[in-house]
Amino acid sequence: MNRRCLQKAGLLIALSAALGGFAQAELRKFTNTTGDKHFQAELVQYLPQKKLVEVRRESGKLMKFRLDVLSEADQKYVLDRAPLLDIAKDLKINAKIQIGKKDVQKSPPFKRTTTPKSYKVTFRNTSNMAMKDLDVEYEIHWIKDNGTGRRGEVKNVAKGTTMLSAVLPRQDFTLSTDPVKILYKEPYGST
Image 1 (cartoon, rainbow, N blue to C red):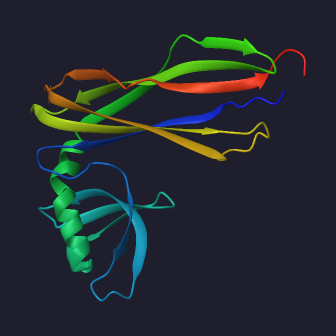
Image 2: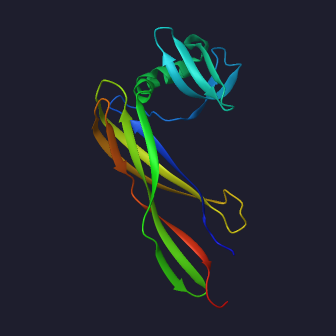
Image 3: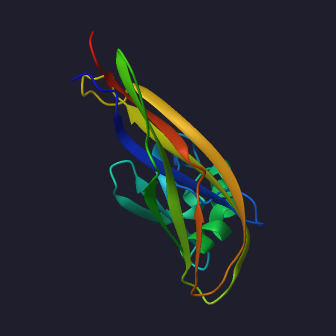
């Protein structure tokens, strides 16, 4: 059966606080002070008292090194994101997919099924301080196949934003993303 179907769904959440910037995983090309060495990694943590930077390489390996071995631009990047990394370690995020009521339309030669899908996202503040004025930006990604079973042939994205006025200490805050209608199409009736 040649069925166009959902292969993979994912949710990307970016948080922006009154401090500015984003607390999200992103690969960056880090360069040393002389500019002759560089590598791709994700900034994980900055320890200001020791002036140590922790990054995760593309391979998943964690590395720690002194801030002063990085280029001036990379040092600024680390210092700009340090306050949000500190907040991010105390904010746990859990997302659960929600599937709405299907709408089926049968008109030969195809049967079209539209299914609304969204995410219920729970933010848990594990710290003893309230987190206030968090802007939440989210993207829902999904990949369809063309009936061949191969992944990655068509990517679609839906976006949304919302504001969390406060996530209280040791409390949860839950929100639902806007639904995205996913279309499944398959042959139907006489052809």
